[in-house]
Image (cartoon, rainbow, N blue to C red; front, side, top):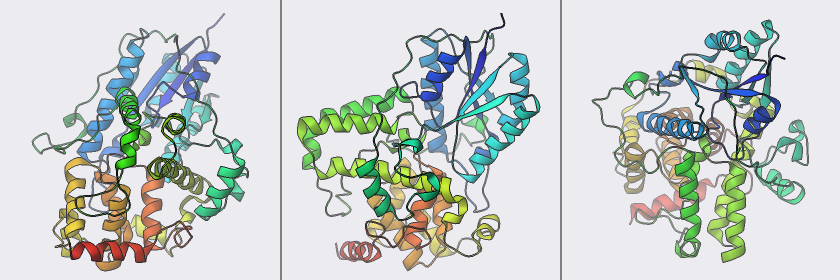
Length: 425
């Protein structure tokens, strides 16, 4: 009897724990072929005079692939690595390895969904099914108290109804046994130079996180080991010397090295030991905001952005950077807190959420630059870049998002007060 082989197409889901796609593929097949594509579309330039992916995030990605490869090698297997577009290689892989079905996680950004559509069209011609999974959210869409089309557009309403009526499922266990498709050549992990980066230019010098599932789980464990210390971190007042509490879990969440449900249940366990506090609540609130933006993109697509001619702005961005925007990017505005955050972003690929609101407020409401300039620059610089969260948050600060003016959403007056205090600091 012909064995059933499933190709598991990894994207932003670089983990073994709580990975329904992987669990299902193992259960429904005789062997699996894990594959990751280094898609050149993610390593080029954008229309905004920025790079699609900066060197700091590229390094984090490479480390994350190293970690996933080692995890599969522990099972005497591997992951096939290909530099190229998925739709250009998928049919060859299906034919060469006699694949019966392809599994992947569905994304919500227009570029990512477009890539899925290209692959699905190619596979359809060979009567091969592309099965979609959703493994990036805290809540499964089928567990929400409303269908996608009826999800409240205002975050506060989404939060209230979801916390009251939905459940967070337990995590899928990491596999204990995996059978791999026979293969002799699994491909090399590219270096930064292979992805088009200038190796003579310095990569972010203060990397705040090492990529991969192993590092992400270790950071989460270490964070919760010191649960009592989280109480002492004051997040009520933002100053240059007090950025507030940040779990710094976001980069691992963005690439799927950590599951949001894993984070949720670990924090809930910590609450049972240490009791609840505002910093624990802040982490759980951040997970909800991640869900909200993903579900909004799923429901509305780019119609989420309440701005005339938004598609034109993306295809043909506004004028080239002014000197004010260039100074903002370089951290040379003359505003103490804005400059510190922008310089930190350039060095490390990370600034806390409070800092992102402050620098966005300055760009949009003081410099009066269009918000898409900031969103595109963050796309290049952030190690934890996620399309839905990044573009959704920037739109909210600009008043162009569906939840921008809602209670619990962006508070412009509050940000002005923080910035005014720091001017006098």
